[in-house]
Image 1 (cartoon, helix red, strand yellow):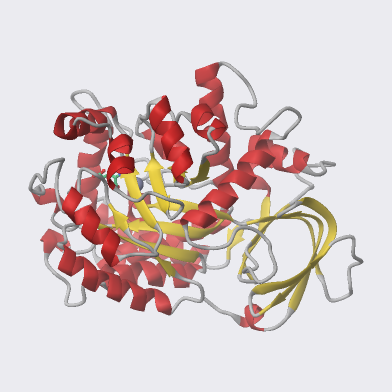
Image 2 (image 1 turned 135 degrees about the vertical axis):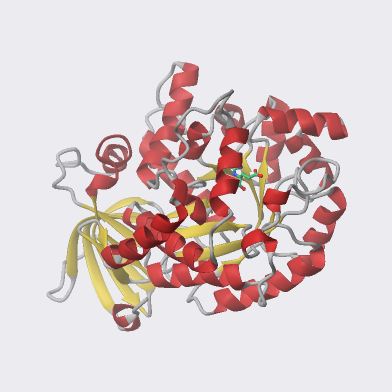
Amino acid sequence: MSSGSAARATSLFFRHLLLPAGWARNVRVKIEGGLISATDADADARPDDERHDCGLPGMPNLHSHAFQRGMAGLAERRGPTGDSFWTWRDLMYRFVERMTADDVRVIATLAYIEMLERGFTRVGEFHYLHHDRGGARFADIAEMSGAIAAAAADSGIGLTLLPVLYCHAGFGGQPPRPDQARFILDLDGYARLLEGADRAVAALPDGVVGTAPHSLRAVSPGQLKQLEQLTAGRPVHIHIAEQVKEVDDCVAWSGQRPVEWLLDHADVDGRWCLVHATHMTDAEATAMARSGAIAGLCPITEANLGDGLFPAEVFLSAGGRYGVGSDSNVLIDCAEELRLLEYGQRLARRERNVLARGAGRSTGADIYAAALDGGATALGVAAGLTIGAPADIVSLDLRHPSLDGREGDAITDSYVFAAGSRAIDCVWRRGDKLVSGGVHRDRSRVATYYRAALGKLVA
Ligand code: NGQ
Ligand code: ZN
């Protein structure tokens, strides 16, 4: 990533800018060393200011498995019997079998470029592909973590790396399946991986390393406790209650439902991100909200995999916080995640404007603000365009017919529900303009490598 423009002081001028307090007019944003040093509203543009119509803070993408971008669209053909999340997972395992560290790096770089083009400026990479083909150990246990960090560096996206502990095939410590061999670690290995991940991410300007017990299926209660001790103070992400079978298996194993079990057996607080948390009783949704944990919602993937619908109303009325993730990366698009989040609720409830926080409030603006705050918290960084924060900004072209003449929250509504990511013009990461006219500066070069890698993998 070139840091030419990030190094010196620059100023951007926006006719409309979404600041933490809401939309402001005629804002000069001063950027020094990639960080915001001032946001002056109702200002006059100066001759050297780079002028834009409209800017929003870049959205954190709190849950990604970057390598799955390589199989986008390749799991949509009906199989012999009952297609489900579990048959999809078998296909996904087969796809990952042949991937080298170089393949992962190239596929992740393209995925991250697309995230930047579609409104995300930081990614939480839930990273569990640790070993070489056939489960062979790399000389450096953090080789694959290094490939992810390199993809973040090459694309310019902010990275919160979440090295995953994956030990078992199911509840009660079931031995892993052969096709899970590339994921498996014990706690000693995990401790070494974490050190390697810290080293890999230290090369990035604002990298964060969290921790991720994969799921209650893959990690035993004893391992979860040890992991908590090993990783104190870091963001903790876990997949939970995504599928009904997982809930049933958890009840058969423990007598409790997954979210119920977790809240009873771990110190779940605001450092935690519970990814999916789809299948919860009202009591679980209320207790989860009160714990302060962030719900990691991935509407496009949850729809694609047939997971089910998050109990948003109960969760939000208990004060729950959420962010969004692109998970399987079958389609990468911030506005589309936010739109589908609301549309799922509308379809199920046969109501409108479900996620707006009260009468007279804008649905798009409330979802955008909630996902910004929840996503940043989950990824261990500050939210929004505040002084001292990285200048991670997405500009919209207000000449788009669906945005023409819009002001204030109507901009957010029209972006999320009408124009979508086609209205994205430029994207800055730490003050560096990576995307112009909706296209990342390295897209075509990286797409060439990507096609070569895929040509080999999808033969
Ligand atoms: C994953 N994906 O880690 O990529 C999982 C599948 C598993 C989702 N849960 C693997 N959507 O759950 O074991
Ligand atoms: Zn996931």
